[in-house]
Length: 167
Image (cartoon, rainbow, N blue to C red; front, top):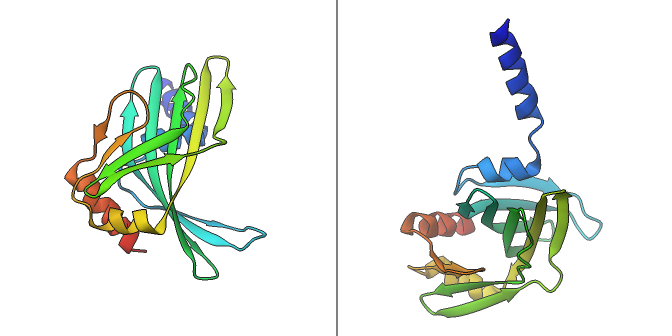
């Protein structure tokens, strides 16, 4: 009986996972594809998590997104997610590649109180065509959005480049 109750409880927990938990527990470097209907034109969004910093009271996740629009246009963006117990007020992401330093800013980031002791922040940071070309060939990449910089591992850079070329 205890085993059945445990299994039922586990099923309810898993079925009740929110998008936040799905994002936190998803694998790095895995392509997630979603089709979006939009009045301006439908598109397919491919998203891959590049970096995760999961701590007790705060989680940061950096994703790269490539959208293929029905009119043939391809756009790219970085999406920075923060889930934590207090506001950080992120507004920008700095990226250093082989050829230079880029600062991407979101003038109107998404911020929401998730519950009494939990907040969400999300920045959507479009990538220029020039930066996209640089990302395709860089051998090193460092990101910084808060206190200390984070060096992406070679595997992460390689998987990002395969992601941007593929699909």
